[in-house]
Length: 103
Length: 354
Image 1 (cartoon, helix red, strand yellow):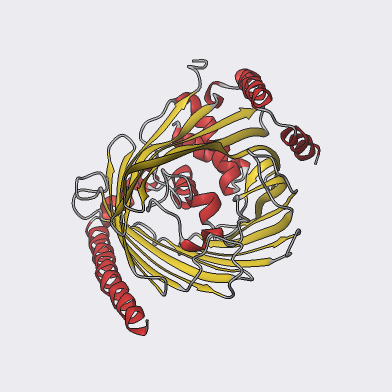
Image 2 (cartoon, rainbow over the protein chains, first blue to last red):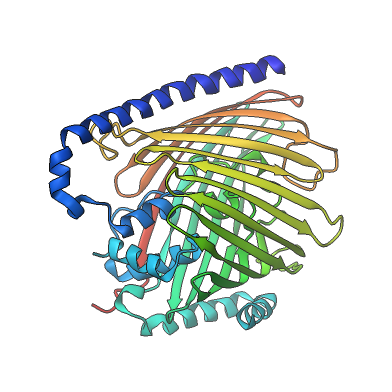
């Protein structure tokens, strides 16, 4: 059983090492890109910043699931209310999320 | 909590016709809402196959969800499960046996009392660790089957019948703390089976590092009066599509853990490129039987299992799930192959106001 456990651990390491390497590579690419585009980003200012609604979505909704592709604006309020209950959002966060879902 | 008691009393006497009337009433009650508050029907429809030890079973499944807001503070929500299982007859007999199941997973009313408190009444998912109430829908889970320890702390049915309060105790930019506390009555109702129990969960989330840790506890208040403990840790590094989730659970008769990692790359044209839609998934889990009196769904002997999955996220909310698992135990080692497809639907119950 110990041999099997060792094999499982080795397998886990073999999978996590390339994943972590890829994550590191992506962060390097992002940082290089950020340095090159520093001036452009500074000029863009708040327009390029992540909206609060998007932040609420990323930090709460997409922790469990991806965003559904395309839905009626008639139910955006219901989705925001459902997420408020599920993710214990405040009223303000619910409103920001609604603005993000239905700009 | 009048809402919880009222809902509880209603559900204990539940008959299908009453539930249908209640469902229609809720839909009509919501017609006075704003244009964005139209009740929605969401959920998943899927077809799964599983091959274990050379035997293949097939499982078409539908898991619809209803969410209907009433006014500014109330939300009625419910999820149901309808499935048909086709399994080989075994004992050398040709052909398949089939069985079906249809029932509510939960049916609850939520009252948003304040920014820090939501009161829930009815049949609710037991908030023990994270799998039961966050990852169990078929359109969310990365694997077809849940972790081996999913039965620890969720008290057989996974649902409680009674009242729950939850909310965000503290919410700062640097951290937030959320909580759940609940009590469930004993119910032998076929649709809303539950055990007399009490429990709670608390979790700390650090937005900067995208790290969440939490602890769960519940106690069975009937029969053997067992205690269950759980802990979870999730890490999702910022600006990446990598997720690491883990849980530990311990009961009187068994304990175990699972760790799951999944990743999508943005390096080749973003998440919606044909490469970015691939999602490799890995899960390792171990269970330990503490005695032979199993009151949970954990394997009867110590078990180790590694799942290797490759999911593909098709356009239009469709997902292909494939995985291979090798399970090691004293009862015998087995290979488990799983393939499935899930479509997530989401639409309003009617057109609504423009």
